[in-house]
Amino acid sequence: MSIAELSAANDDIKAMMAEIGTRARKAAKGLATLPTKQKDAALLASAMLVRANAGDILEANARDMEAGREKGLAPAMLDRLLLTDARIEAIAKGIEEVASLKDPVGDVIANWDRPNGLNISRVRVPLGVIGVIYESRPNVTADAAVLCLKAGNAAILRGGSESFHSSRAIFACLEEGMAAANLPDHTVQMVPTTDRAAVGEMLSGINGSLDLIIPRGGRSLVERVQAEARVPVFAHLDGLCHVYVHEDANLEMAKEIIVNAKMRRTGICGSAETILVDRKAESTHLSPIIDALINAGCEVRGDTTTQAADARVKPATQTDFETEYLDAIISIAVVDGIKAAMEHIDAYGSDHTDCIVTEDEIAATRFLNEVDSAIVLHNASTQFADGGEFGMGAEIGIATGKFHARGPVGLEQLTSFKYQVRGRGQVRPN
Image (cartoon, rainbow, N blue to C red; front, side, top):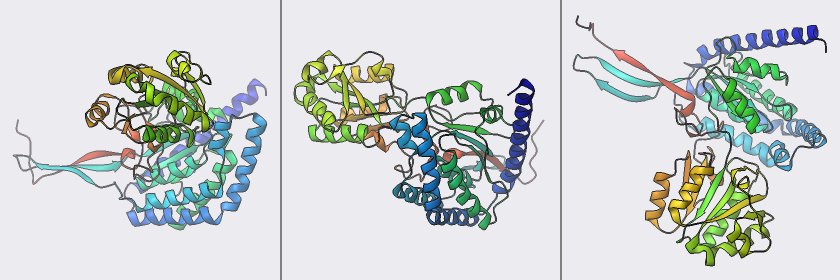
C-alpha cells in the first residue's frame, strides 16, 4: 500500500470511529434513565437468541479456530478462543444472571441532612460510554455488552482478529435482542475492522466520546493501552497468582486446591503460577504436592530444595518466578514462614490473586490482611477469581489498580455517582 493509500485508509478509519463515538454518546443519554425492565427484556431476548443461533456461532468459531491453528496460536490461546455447546450455554446463562441482578443505577449510596436544612444524596449513575478492547476470547463480547447495558452505559467493542467471526456472530444475537426491546439505537457497537488504527482512535478517546477503556488480552495489548490511553483504564498486566502452603495446611486439601488452581484452566488469569511451601511443611507436603501436579500433567520447575525432593522437577530461574505461564507449567519455592511467603508475593506477584492454605485462623487472617492483592483467598482455589463466582454475574475483567474498581469488574464497578441536593430556598451567607 502506498503512503497516499495508507493515509486515505487511516482517514476512513478516523471518520468511521468518530461516527461510532457520536452514536455511542447519543445512545448513552437515553440509556442513563432507561427502566430496568426494558434493559432486562433486552438481556433475556439476547440470551434466547444466543441459544437459538448456537449452530451459527459454532460455525463462525470453527473458522476462527482453523485460522488460529494456521497462525500457530499457543494451546492456551486456542483454549481461550474455543467455543463449545457448553460454553455457549454458559454465555446464555451469564446473560440471564446479569438480568437477574439488581440494577445499580439510581441506588442511593448515602443520604444526610445538613444543619441548614439541605438534604444531600449520593446516587449511582452510569459512567457513560465504555470502550472494551479484547483479543481471543469471544465470550467477552457478551460479557462486556450485557454488563455495560445493565449498568446504563453505551459500549464500543473492538475484538481481536483471532476471534473476529465468533465475536460477530455473538454480537448479532445481542444486537437483535436489544432491538426487540426497543433500546436506543447503537447501545452497543462492534468496531467492524481489525485494523489497529481503530485501537489508536479508541485510545485517543474518539474526540471525547469515551469515558473509560477496559483492555482484555495479553501483556502487549494492556501495556499499550495503559501507556497511550487518554481516558481512564481498568486493567491488569499479569495474573501471577500464588498459593502458599502454610505449616498447618491440610495436605489433601492443599493438593486438591493446587491442582485445581493450576490445571482446571491453565490459560486464564486466575490460574496459579507459583506454589510456596512452608519449610516446616517441606518433609510432609512438598513431595506429595509435586507428585499430584506431575500426575495431573503439569511440568514443575523448582528451587534447589524442590529439585531435591523429586528428580522430575526442572530447575527454576528467577525468570520463572516472574512468568505468567498460562500453560501447564508451575514454579515451586520453599520459604521460611509466612513472612517470607508474603515477601515473595510482594516481590514477584502482580496484585491479582493469592491464596493461603492453612488450618491456622490467625495465620489466615494475617495473610488476608497483609497481602495487598485485589483478591486474597483462604483455603480456596485461585480459579474463583471471577465475577460470576463472586455472584456478580458476568465480568469484564479483573482490575488490579487501587482507584474506583478493584478485583472483578461487574455492574457496580461500571457506575459512578453524583450528588443530588434538595433545598427549600437556602442561599449561602456572605
